[in-house]
Length: 153
Image: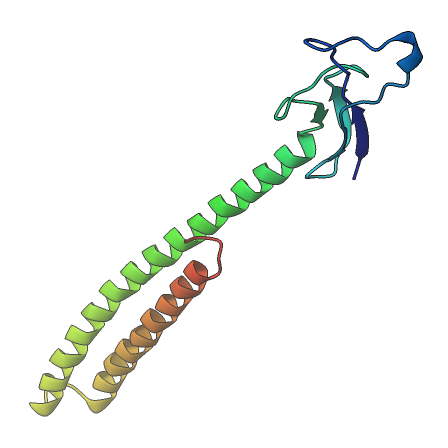
């Protein structure tokens, strides 16, 4: 971290000027300036001895590393949002398939009870429905995990 000492130029406005016997003049205050972030200084916006005020731009730090980090974070966010959308689309698709498979399983159960279909056919339809129920549960868990990962809220 860069530390700089600034000396405030002494202003004699509305004061008596020192006499030659009092030439030992000090600044009102010495200020230590610390950067909030580390980085390479691109520009210094003051001259030594120049009056500066609070909030005035003193240094320009190279913004390129920070801009690159921001762009990377934005890209990661977009990627995670796309994952969430994909998980939601998969969930919707699988919920529709599960609903259809449930209807088939109910129909085949009635046909099995009437002796129209073999037990093996009913078992296959029922197994397909149960697999889709598990798939829907897995998709819900995946969506919750993506949303809870901190990337997308």
